[in-house]
Length: 277
Ligand code: KIV
Image 1 (cartoon, rainbow, N blue to C red):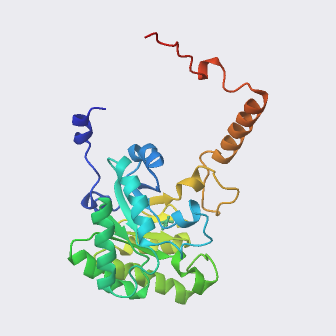
Image 2 (image 1 turned 45 degrees about the vertical axis):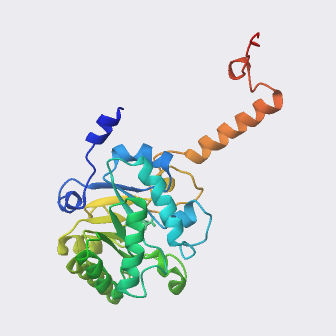
């Protein structure tokens, strides 16, 4: 594609996402690096540089050890390749909870240093002030309610939410508050369909579900989960490919060829003729 044509691709904007409330479902996936972002970009409305990168790419047990510098590095890689999807950077644990001012410093760094268009925060009860503070200062914010992976330490792991009335009410109010505070979209993770449907009906912005049923205005999955790169995936993941098997088969074949000297063959070997003089 020529540089001129590339410039003509119009990137999905925050108002475009907002306008999809109740319309065609938003297609969203996580992305952490340039080669994958290049493959996902033409098919997605939104790419999230999720702090799940800590578990998916760096092998951490949770997202707690992910830093803002890590998010910026991965955000830069994704932004080099994603030309049309809206790119959202997750603010990691410890980079925004202390105060709206701390959140502003982290979010403005994330946007300025990557060129991404928005940030996401896991919006617990304390977060409405932060969402308002950022939105009013020109930083688009996506909320995240229900199962919040950054709360895993307090909760003893990753647990679906809304199992009792008190929890349902809390998740519902967190979503309403994020909406009222100016979030342009809200991720709902790990809740039953009736609660997701209730929230989706009650808020003015698109809801993006992960383990939250087809009642949401869009869906997001961790890309490596849906590509079948891991032995285990949560109940809500559908595997659209079996990449782990494909990689293992390919590596096994390569190892066999190296050992038998079938690789490299003549076609994969240089044969320069010496130049005279
Ligand atoms: O970090 C992440 O990948 C996320 C998605 C699961 C929504 O927050």
